[in-house]
Image (tube, rainbow, N blue to C red):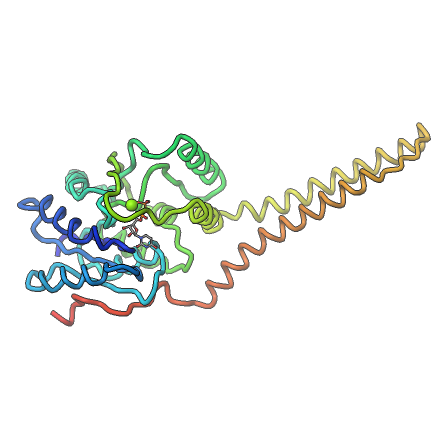
Length: 315
Ligand code: UDP
Ligand code: MG
């Protein structure tokens, strides 16, 4: 098996068949030895039915695997499951919603074959089809996280990438529960080349991202790859202590030299509220890390498989 396409699917019933046909058309005569690993991430619509139909129709070609989760575990888990079961020497992660065209995979293959040194080819969005405000927030986030994290995050680079087997194995070795792929891809190292691509409009179904989910994902990314927030708490503590000592000296001198007896009601209220707020903020940061540790030490599986069509021993 040469190439595996890993396609996470969550409520994509209208896209499955189109996706499969698009791959077939794009690869026709150019890539012959390939498989598609569909990961049905607890879809609530007819995605499973579509996948099962596709699998039955193509069983003889032995080029489709369908992994079905017991519930929705999220795209990160779906990618992990897909990578774990992909058999190819090259593995490409691609969305099943046709926003990422299979033709780009051909360009990735060309690129990776053009230079032995390249282990991974990632596609980045040339033009983002989103509001200026959203683009601004995203690029601000990348600037911030690149400053504080130990790995490099590339703005605009998605999970859409082709990897050699050695890199896939390295990613699978990272079995952390809270997965933030953008960080993981970078953390494992390997030589990555970037090619631009244009994201297509979604024709069917809708994006699973909401502002709330994006925000949570951003926080996950920071906590998974940086201890900066913990250090921030220390820095805030030290700074407020120094300021309060300076203020103490100021008040004592004011009393001794100018003889002013400050009533200080407002000062006290402000300080109490400010320090209380800061303490809660720092506790919150600790809590974020603690909750991640808590979930990790429980050592729960990243996903639970309900069914696996096209598994090796079935063939
Ligand atoms: N997806 C998934 N599990 C989820 C959410 C999304 O497997 O919980 C899949 C989805 O079916 C699609 C891909 O991940 O193939 C990208 O999702 P989406 O299109 O919502 O993201 P966007 O393209 O808007 O970034
Ligand atoms: Mg999409």
